[in-house]
Image 1 (spheres, one colour):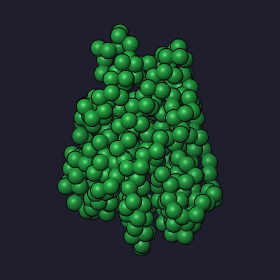
Image 2 (spheres, one colour):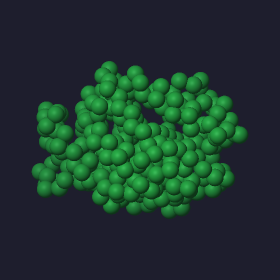
Image 3 (cartoon, one colour):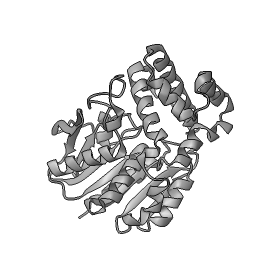
Image 4 (cartoon, helix red, strand yellow):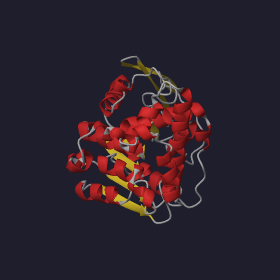
Length: 318
C-alpha cells in the first residue's frame, strides 16, 4: 500500500552494520529539515517499497524507511538457507532502530507502522517512550500466542477448504507440531522442493485469510519464489516465538505509552487480526484514538488513507 504524495527518491541511503553479519538497508526521504519520522513495514519480511515513501508529506517530514533484517535490500536475506535467524529477533530490530536514530541524531520521531510494523512499533515505543513523538498504527497486531493460534488454526473455521489444504500440505511426521512450527521446519529443510512447496502453501493461506477485504487483489510478490520463501521463513520465525515477547506484553504495558499521542486504524472485517486487539490496546493507552474502518479488512478501505494522512499532518505540527 502506498500513499498519495508524488514519488520521490531518497536524499540519503546506506547500510547499517547491525552486527552478527547483518547489514540493514535504510533510506531518508522528504525534507532534511522536516520532522523526523520512521516507517515500519509489515510481514515480517515484506521489506519497504518506493511507494511507501509517499505516505509522508515531503515538505513536512524527513522520513526514514528501513528493510528489517533478512528482507528487502538488507543482507543476508532470510531465503538463503544458511541465513542465521537466531540474530533476527524483535530485540535485534529494536536495537537497529535505535542505532539508526543515534546515527542520524534524531531526538524523537513520529512512527508509522502497518500490520507487523505495529507490533514492532509498539515494542520499540514501550522500550524507548522518550524517543517517540507520536504513533500512527494501521491494522493493529501484537503477535501474541493467542493471535498466532487464531490466524494459523482457529480462523480455519471461516475458510475450511483453504485451511484443509494448508494442513494437508504438512507431512504426517510433522503433524504432531503446531502448524506454525511445522511450516518453520519445512521452510528450513535442506530439500529445495520441500522449502518451495512450504512457502507456496504458506503464502496461499496468507492470501486466503486476508481476502475478506472488499476489492482484495492478490499480492503479485507471492509469484516470486525467493520472495515467498523469504517472507514465509520470517513470518513463521517471528510467529512461532510470539515476536519474542512475553504473552500479552504489549497490551499489559500499554500504559507506558500514555502521554504519547496515537491513532489506531483498524478494519472491522479484519479476520487476520480481529478488532479486539486494537480495542484492548486503546483502552489501556489513554492518549490514543481508535478509528474503525467499516469497509475494510486487513488492508484497504476508502477511509484508511485520509485517516493516515490526517494523523501525520496533525503530528507534523510543532
